Length: 112
Image 1 (tube, rainbow, N blue to C red):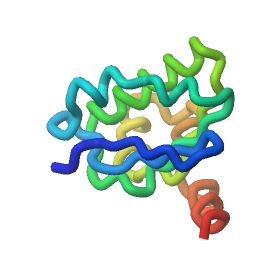
Image 2 (image 1 turned 45 degrees about the vertical axis):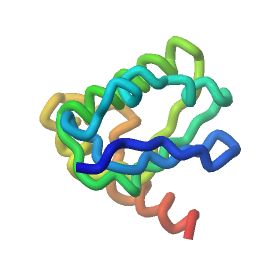
Image 3 (image 1 turned 120 degrees about the vertical axis):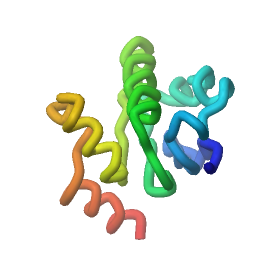
Image 4 (image 1 turned 90 degrees about the vertical axis):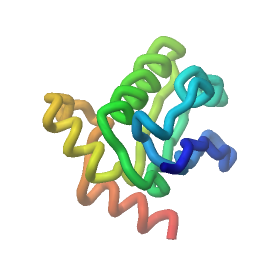
Protein backbone atom coordinates (compact mmCIF):
# COMPACT_ATOMS: atom_id res chain seq x y z
CA UNK A 1 0.00 0.00 0.00
CA UNK A 2 1.34 3.38 -1.03
CA UNK A 3 -0.42 6.49 0.28
CA UNK A 4 -1.60 8.92 -2.38
CA UNK A 5 0.42 12.09 -2.80
CA UNK A 6 -0.39 14.92 -5.19
CA UNK A 7 2.79 16.66 -6.28
CA UNK A 8 2.62 20.16 -7.76
CA UNK A 9 4.92 20.35 -10.80
CA UNK A 10 3.93 23.97 -11.52
CA UNK A 11 1.97 25.54 -14.37
CA UNK A 12 -1.18 23.61 -13.49
CA UNK A 13 0.48 20.18 -13.77
CA UNK A 14 0.20 17.71 -10.91
CA UNK A 15 1.50 14.17 -10.51
CA UNK A 16 -0.59 11.66 -8.59
CA UNK A 17 1.85 9.34 -6.85
CA UNK A 18 0.84 6.19 -4.97
CA UNK A 19 -2.08 3.81 -5.02
CA UNK A 20 -5.62 4.92 -5.81
CA UNK A 21 -7.15 2.20 -3.67
CA UNK A 22 -9.51 2.18 -0.72
CA UNK A 23 -6.76 1.12 1.69
CA UNK A 24 -4.29 3.78 0.49
CA UNK A 25 -6.61 6.77 0.84
CA UNK A 26 -6.83 8.72 4.04
CA UNK A 27 -9.12 11.57 5.06
CA UNK A 28 -6.59 14.12 3.83
CA UNK A 29 -6.62 12.62 0.32
CA UNK A 30 -10.38 12.44 0.10
CA UNK A 31 -10.99 15.93 1.47
CA UNK A 32 -8.10 17.75 -0.22
CA UNK A 33 -9.42 19.40 -3.35
CA UNK A 34 -7.49 22.67 -3.00
CA UNK A 35 -5.12 21.70 -5.82
CA UNK A 36 -8.11 21.78 -8.18
CA UNK A 37 -8.30 25.55 -7.87
CA UNK A 38 -4.62 26.31 -8.57
CA UNK A 39 -5.42 27.46 -12.09
CA UNK A 40 -8.24 27.25 -14.64
CA UNK A 41 -6.54 24.40 -16.54
CA UNK A 42 -5.17 21.45 -14.60
CA UNK A 43 -3.41 18.36 -15.87
CA UNK A 44 -3.17 15.32 -13.61
CA UNK A 45 -0.45 12.85 -14.58
CA UNK A 46 -1.35 9.38 -13.31
CA UNK A 47 1.81 7.63 -14.55
CA UNK A 48 3.01 7.05 -10.97
CA UNK A 49 -0.19 5.37 -9.78
CA UNK A 50 0.70 1.83 -8.75
CA UNK A 51 -2.65 0.16 -8.10
CA UNK A 52 -6.20 1.36 -8.52
CA UNK A 53 -9.64 0.12 -7.56
CA UNK A 54 -13.20 1.40 -7.50
CA UNK A 55 -12.36 3.81 -4.66
CA UNK A 56 -9.77 5.40 -6.94
CA UNK A 57 -12.34 5.72 -9.69
CA UNK A 58 -14.76 7.30 -7.22
CA UNK A 59 -12.10 9.80 -6.13
CA UNK A 60 -11.42 10.75 -9.75
CA UNK A 61 -15.14 11.27 -10.33
CA UNK A 62 -15.24 13.57 -7.28
CA UNK A 63 -12.27 15.52 -8.66
CA UNK A 64 -14.12 15.88 -11.97
CA UNK A 65 -17.30 17.01 -10.21
CA UNK A 66 -15.42 19.54 -8.07
CA UNK A 67 -13.47 20.90 -11.06
CA UNK A 68 -16.69 21.35 -13.03
CA UNK A 69 -18.30 23.23 -10.15
CA UNK A 70 -15.29 25.60 -10.06
CA UNK A 71 -15.20 25.87 -13.88
CA UNK A 72 -11.74 24.36 -14.01
CA UNK A 73 -10.71 22.41 -17.09
CA UNK A 74 -9.35 19.09 -15.85
CA UNK A 75 -7.31 16.72 -17.97
CA UNK A 76 -5.84 13.33 -17.06
CA UNK A 77 -2.81 11.89 -18.78
CA UNK A 78 -1.22 8.47 -18.50
CA UNK A 79 -4.41 6.94 -17.14
CA UNK A 80 -3.66 3.46 -15.70
CA UNK A 81 -5.26 0.57 -17.57
CA UNK A 82 -6.91 -0.54 -14.29
CA UNK A 83 -8.85 2.73 -14.11
CA UNK A 84 -9.79 2.69 -17.77
CA UNK A 85 -11.12 -0.86 -17.38
CA UNK A 86 -13.09 0.09 -14.26
CA UNK A 87 -14.57 3.04 -16.14
CA UNK A 88 -15.61 0.70 -18.95
CA UNK A 89 -17.22 -1.71 -16.49
CA UNK A 90 -19.06 1.20 -14.89
CA UNK A 91 -20.27 2.58 -18.21
CA UNK A 92 -18.13 5.71 -17.87
CA UNK A 93 -15.83 5.02 -20.79
CA UNK A 94 -17.78 7.46 -22.96
CA UNK A 95 -16.43 10.30 -20.80
CA UNK A 96 -13.47 12.01 -22.46
CA UNK A 97 -11.50 11.71 -19.22
CA UNK A 98 -11.12 7.94 -19.54
CA UNK A 99 -9.10 7.64 -22.71
CA UNK A 100 -6.41 5.04 -23.13
CA UNK A 101 -4.13 3.96 -25.92
CA UNK A 102 -2.70 6.39 -28.44
CA UNK A 103 -3.50 9.63 -26.61
CA UNK A 104 -1.98 8.39 -23.36
CA UNK A 105 1.11 7.22 -25.22
CA UNK A 106 1.34 10.55 -27.02
CA UNK A 107 1.43 12.37 -23.69
CA UNK A 108 4.20 10.05 -22.46
CA UNK A 109 6.22 10.79 -25.58
CA UNK A 110 5.77 14.57 -25.16
CA UNK A 111 7.12 14.51 -21.62
CA UNK A 112 10.14 12.33 -22.52
